[in-house]
Length: 234
Image 1 (cartoon, one colour):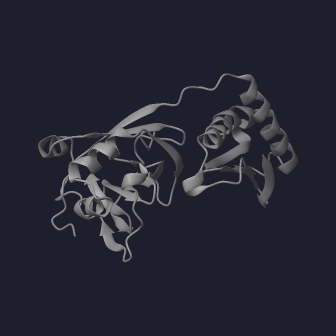
Image 2: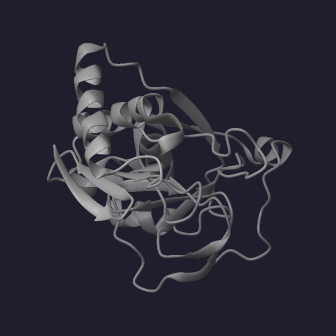
């Protein structure tokens, strides 16, 4: 573990050298444990925590504490997490309507992998994913790792508008778009579960460290759960 200054009121903790597609689940678990421990140790001195694949950004109130005290708290949290038994991560099941009308890249991805569309759907929903990070937008959870048989590079030309709830694949990561936005991931379906609601508590249904499973649903169930099919999805 390495700790570096990231600003006048911030430290960043690096738990390993690997990131992205090569992320180690053990490193992600260490990030999660630190994220759980620091709020208790720091209380009101803590402003925010921003976990990522192999790092944790710690933002603190400089009027109440300083870099040295935060470093000590980080080391204390490390010792605490080693002494305590690791909590089981939470399993979250997300429904997904997989179809060509909801996933315009589904057929192309299947052809690229030399699989049937049903095979792609089966592989995507049979894998248990881990939430490695949340960003680039609130509720956008980076999930890994996708079965290598259905891994696919980002589109050469990103779409100007990806619909809210789009289930997508990029390389060996998968995600659900929390809101309509530009994007270059391969779209294979739609999820009716809101991934971000600022008025709800918690505001997101998933957190870093959670385990995610997708469950295929039919069109009628997708609509009954509040899902919406965009008028044009190309």
